[in-house]
Length: 180
Image 1 (cartoon, rainbow, N blue to C red):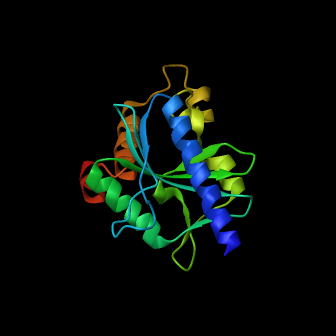
Image 2: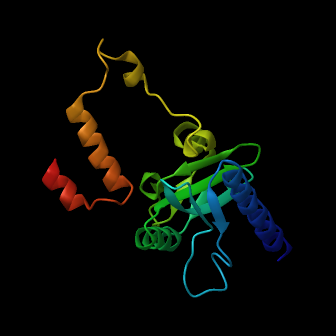
């Protein structure tokens, strides 16, 4: 029981840390009261917005072991985010690392229906905190290589925007298929 209590305290501390960091980055932010417990409605751990983007965030931390989320946790997050008009994000933090963010659809799904994030995956594929809050922007090798022009193919850009709308839950897959 002591392990559970100290793990819960650490989780609470990490959530407050994330709230404070988002606040310092200029977001209006709040930690949901009794998120994950003591309420019949499943609430995300954190709600944050900057006037342009709004997020419902489930925050998880670990000393180094992989982080697991149940299918129910992820379903509840995406349901709440969709109904609230926010983007669902999973925020993970491993000891001695910063926060990394994932769209729920980008997480590895186990055979048992749980979701998993390994530390290596977070560092390699996650959106880091500065990028998440708009301080930096990830640039790919394709974007740097270019074709001598402005490097943006309008047709590819349109497809990317449609796929991002589906990923972020702003467009149903069926509508995207019709457009594409």
